[in-house]
Length: 140
Ligand code: DAT
Ligand code: MG
Image (cartoon, rainbow, N blue to C red):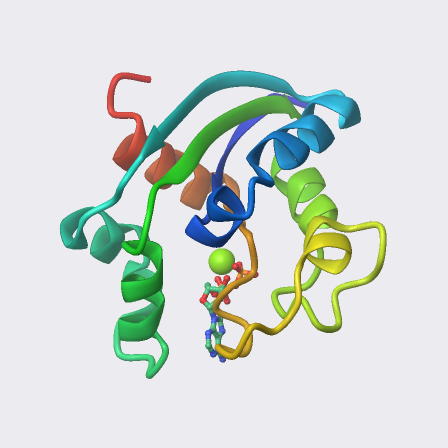
């Protein structure tokens, strides 16, 4: 299979809790290669584009507010089937029920916003990965 790239974000809750290193450690330990890593605070334009698929959903505004609440660690990782592989590492969207062994299952919980604070984002398809990498790392 072709080598793939995916966009990973350690969300503001993960950075604030000091879990960025632990999350990157898991990505590296799984065997994926880090291509780019950058700490930055996203604005409305970037987040609106990033979450375009969720336009019209009731959780979009609180999600964007949360994503702007502090720096995120944006990461591009590479490897065969890394898109599927990172989503497996991340676990289910809801950290309360994500299985132990996963990033969200081991390190996440409900802090009062249901599933919004779930530590990480990972692209869900080759097309979204290309689109999202273009948004966060236009030089790649
Ligand atoms: P994922 O991040 O697992 O790909 P998603 O793309 O469906 O999940 O949603 C993007 C983010 O939006 C998700 O990480 C957390 C938040 N979210 C999703 N569904 C939600 C809901 N029903 N209520 C509140 N936040 C939600
Ligand atoms: Mg998604």
